[in-house]
Length: 291
Ligand SMILES: O=C(O)CCC(=O)C(=O)O
Ligand SMILES: [Fe+2]
Image 1 (cartoon, rainbow, N blue to C red):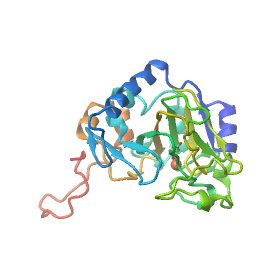
Image 2: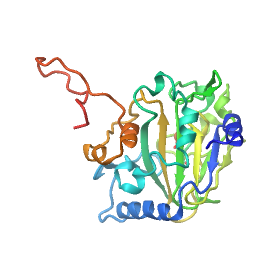
Image 3: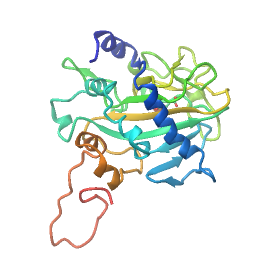
Image 4: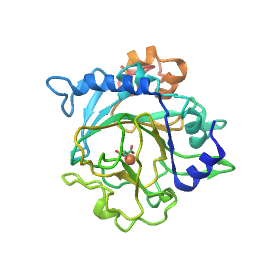
């Protein structure tokens, strides 16, 4: 499924655009679910829940994130192991035949939909110069072994003025911070973007296209100037031993209705063993499923 062309450009540039990754019917179904949340009256505010989905903002002008969007309904569950990228993420995260896959093929440590309106943007972040292991780009012993490979799925067309994702091709291998990094980095209380960052390209997509990128690539977005909302969702794939980035866990209801493969992707963790007579104490680790 992964072509030699895709391998070459993912290695060289750190990202790929997968055109028509989901079909128009599927885009429509996802948008109908999002409409149900966006049109709530009164509107869902920062910190509020809609079922297992949590509205969250980072405090800057980067829009609203609907965390745990895989809880929102079947159209989002289908994205977990979607055939348009399932082979890609397994090959690029790698480790499918070693200890990395001891608990399952992959683990999603964060997933959300992002709604971004006029004037909003996301500043520059990440880059090979940071050296974080969690989202690293790695090719070793003839295999990709990346720490985190993201699928950013467009649910609206994203063209000029729409606040598209911007990235610096090849910066997953950078040894130095971009000289404009500091002034354009994500900042609370200030809107930053990559609009004036030299070497950054804006990725234009049609609804249904997916941007696949290693999370260590230096990226962010352009500032949205057009009316309405840019709608995307992001699924971050890493090795099966990973753990959640944020304070979110899948609900028991979700785990019970997912296929075995999808359940492993959202909850590969084994039941916690306990001594039968131990007094109640550190009860944080879930016994089998999240409470
Ligand atoms: O909002 C965007 O276009 C970029 C999102 C992003 O930084 C990410 O998914 O890691
Ligand atoms: Fe990011």
